[in-house]
Length: 318
Image (cartoon, rainbow, N blue to C red; front, side, top):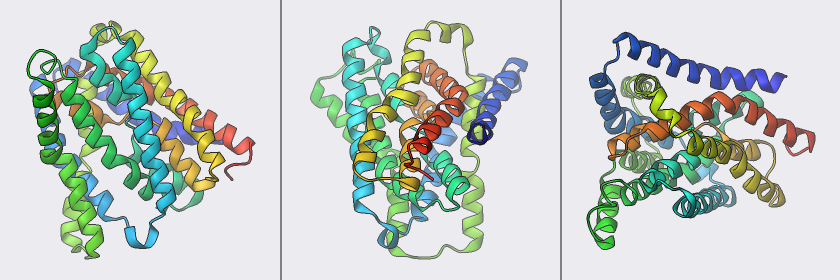
């Protein structure tokens, strides 16, 4: 019950902000023009700043655990490629492949990881290492997949042209540039002036509220019902199947306690609102992505509690 209450406290406010966004959208306070401007601002400014600050706060040389970071990277990559292959094979509407794959693998690692670890262990250092091993790959693969699987790409251009466009997208993506800048800042070991740090933190703090309000305001209930099956499958993959595949392997390799909880968040937490923003900004409809964000947020409190209960019962986390 304690785990359930904690999980609800972590995820329910996220869901309720989407509900507020939906209500405000229906009342006319958040028109489509707001959603469009919000998505652009989040994609190009606030999210890159948030990731810059997250990566810049990691003491890579001091805290680096190569085995753990490598496992985070490998599990993320294998999970992405497996889901992508499955979506290409079984998803009937091929225009949804990009959104489906991204929504299945991309977790709210930066937000929930720190909250969970800080609450359970009083220390979130493993969250930073998990972010280092997974978040850059999240974004690189999102650019590649959303580019190659975009509705426009299906109709125009050769594969070499698509690959060139993907490479250009990776090199110019604001989110990836923010991560790279944060990594470089971390390596330089330069302390940021308090005024600048506070200013950037305030701007970066707009990321989640803006993205969640835009998801809610842009949510199309009737249209989302048409994507009920892929939404359900993506939700089950995100919250249950990926953890079931990789957590036993992590235990076999000796990862316990903080590392295992960080991996649980990486594999089985809510689909990050950044998915919706990136999908919309890269030419996708965004309805499926928004639906998966809603459903994973709604059900993740119960799935995360289930996984915590199983891991504690088996003695792998204290």
